Image (cartoon, rainbow, N blue to C red; front, side, top):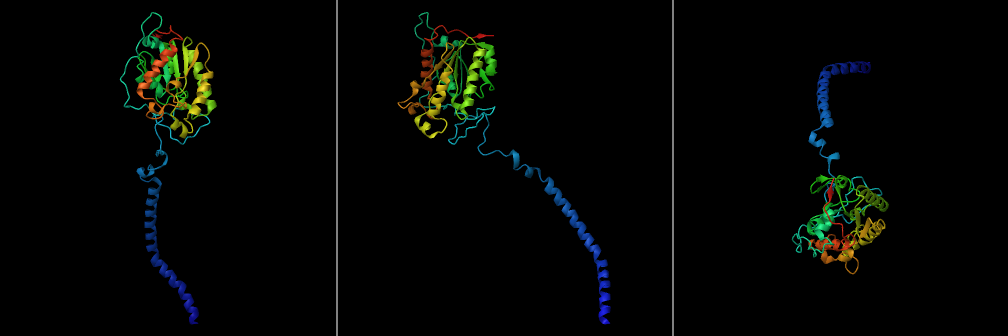
Length: 319
């Protein structure tokens, strides 16, 4: 009998115990919910700085502004289709100083015999289009009369989108320039920065550039200039910017010439060593000649082109 009475009393004692303890549990539960709600809001919204500490705004390693000129690294990729903005694979800018940098001088004019114009007169109706090497002609060759549309990293992929400062016009696109002035001679010096792209894309874009220039300047003689070689040491170690690739592109550019209004010019023999590479003692960065050699380049242009078109001098007409 005692056993049965004990079994009946146990549920009753449990009920009484729960009755007294339930308010304590309710209070604790309410506090826990309040604390949990506050933590949930912090983890969802979070401090603004923590939210932005990583993610899409982080700059990738090695990222540079697209306009910044830089020497290509020696590990390269070749995109099958060039991006519209292009110009990313640029050569380094000219060395600002070198022990052999000359002062700015005007090319000496030969005796005026009434038939052949001197350099200043001959280049007065000329436009030189190009990359950092064309900039070298602008800065060091002593050519004071031609217009220059040149900037470091220029390529046929970026040529028609860039704006360049031109005397008398300010900062303009190439199309605006060609629609504003009439030139007798145009020198196109492009190709080295394009070598990282698909070869067929380079040739298509280059040929289109030649056609467009002729359309906008139908009276001008267009000189397609060979790309200057790099030194042998750079050529040997660089998978893209080497003399084999440069020779390939120069040969293709030459195929676009051969007419009275489109002439191919190759200045490489002036600068090459016995192995067909840019002489190492002519360059401080294995790519660009020292300043004084641009003066020789300018003289070579005059001596090479002058006899072909001796009546080409004169001021460009502004329309």
